[in-house]
Image (cartoon, rainbow, N blue to C red):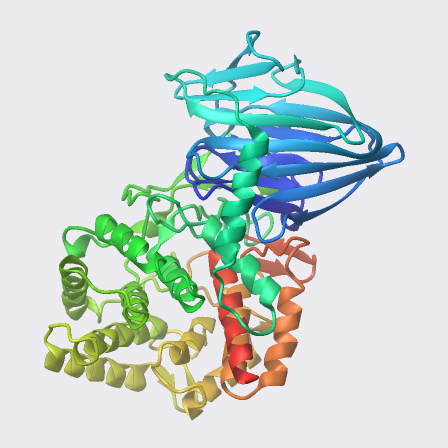
Length: 591
């Protein structure tokens, strides 16, 4: 059975990532991209669905782990009665190869180590043909199935029932290197990696990137780690930013709220870019804007709310029979049906991110501004349409208040582009539309009796996404209507001090009820508290939230308070970017 979600740590080369468990097993790895099929899939099943274990043979061995400074290199120290070793896990940067390195270094005494390698390509649907390459020293295994191939180098392995096992001793001062390299099966086997050079270059790459972070305030360590994770989720070449490294980790254990998050949501990517911009990474807006131009080029009516890492549009959702699911939570899904939804807020998120890029000195090109104008033209015709909202409901579309507020923000950003940045556009018409949208929200999206904005028109329910209204400038942080909304969220959506997205038992999402508090929503509440002069409340909630991160600072989508465990896909970009925003708000409030 797979480990608790919080027992995993991510290593990454900014093309894909591997989840390494506390037990020394890589239980999730998709090569060569995050959205490729898994070759190690034990996370969503058992060891027979693919894994690579490197750990002491002594079952009583204890481990601690950390990242190697401000990097995505994981260091696990194992202690046994006979000695200590360190295992350094990394995905090398700089050579654009698909490598995993596992270096075992003896620290004290002698430790007997074991390997258990189970290769399962195609989401565990294909057991490869494996051969030994006797021309190499140390030994090498080459595994092939269809288009995929890997070469594994290191101590000798022996075949047994579709797996490979081996043991080796490591003495104090000794180093044993293991490596795995993916390559297309029609190409020659890649040459062996210079592990020492690869680790040195990778350490330098990540450390240099992290050094550019501008954050002066509390929670600096958490902010830097979150930014590193956001960078790890950003494809080095295309600029696409995946929402998480995994698919189908359950929001409700044993339930069916299991979704594939290995794609680029325009909303999440836009919010990530805004956070990176706020912390000194100005060059990322141009890279992402280029991705955006390629992904959504064409008729604005064909706009999708998410794309593949290179802008792929076909993300049809299907269920896999080859993986049984995380601790039995089924189905396991690949693709995402929400890619065909209309979500009225998305254009607003994109416009805000590009506006903030201009504020930080990024210049619009002829094509990028033309694209934004085309999106606004589409929004003019469709902003009144019911939509599926930020939470991608699978019930009937609604007129979500949050979506309408983001429509307001889209036109507001366009007006600023003309009035402040000197771009061209029908500003008079945009002003009239902005005012019309506001009037519509105030007439239909506000409950005057309770004094709160509502989830959707015709409803009396609240929704945590309403906390974004002040973030985008729709209303002031201390506007009575905003404060009334906060009170309603505190009354209806707080569970054990953490915030639910909405009350699922009300049936709006078309799914069985029940899920755990959504961590991004709690970080939004921290930001609201800090910006509305409730600094003590903000700090108290922030301290609780950062304590929910695992031992290496990773946080997933939700938190099971009763089970005291993380839930949902991990690491979750939205969770980490809202952590950074919350820390920024607390820092600003304390000045």
